[in-house]
Length: 64
Image (cartoon, rainbow, N blue to C red):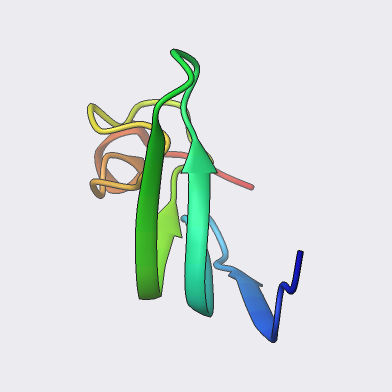
């Protein structure tokens, strides 16, 4: 598996921004979601679109 260059930036009190050519995210049901370029992963646990960030951290007061 060639992962290439991957950059993950943890944003203060926010999401984890992922930048890469291509990522495959395996969901709990076994399905695979493919993302290209940049996307953000939820860290607060309140996103309605998990594992992806929907900005819920701004409303819930997430600190981390």
